[in-house]
Image 1 (tube, rainbow, N blue to C red):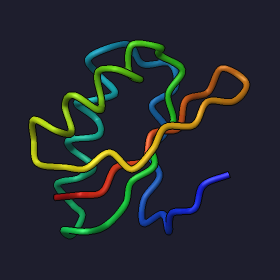
Image 2 (cartoon, rainbow, N blue to C red; image 1 turned 90 degrees about the vertical axis):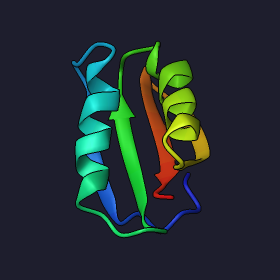
Image 3 (tube, rainbow, N blue to C red; image 1 turned 180 degrees about the horizontal axis):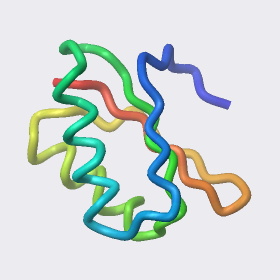
Length: 78
């Protein structure tokens, strides 16, 4: 279970790479620095792609949780 205060949740299930990253980028545009987004995805590539994308865009990976084929990725807007 997450220990982060979630400011926004994004359901990217059913989307394949690169769309979870694209949707995350669009969602983060409307958020303030320091806020946390939870991204739900069932695309296994997102476990590697979103952390790399976050580092390259100045955002911060807080954690990744996986249960029942759903990956939850927590990012803090940089």
